[in-house]
Image (cartoon, rainbow, N blue to C red):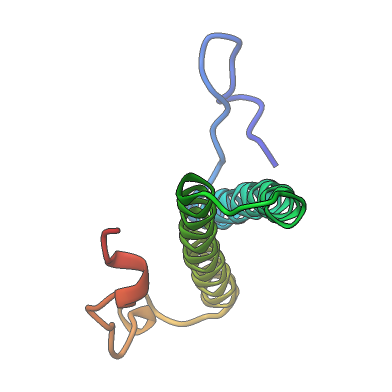
Length: 133
């Protein structure tokens, strides 16, 4: 799908047409967001394993220390933050894939360029994904 005549060893490969470049960019955004979701899920699994170890130590110990409870609270907080970031990354991935699918259909259709715009574009983001911790 690369244009061999426009690609050289000194330049990065170039996609031959604007629709292919747009499709590639949209798919790249979806791929990036899915990778972020995977990284967040890995972080959550590590935190949950650490929480299980902490709970086991608390169960086997004779007394519960304040530092142990604080550590457990910190890991729970980090796990919740990772869950939130995972949900946001999956949402970004889905949005990019929907846009890529729409772009593909519009590219394959015989519609005029002026008829391809969205009839209504929302100007907001989910509060869950835009809020700062």
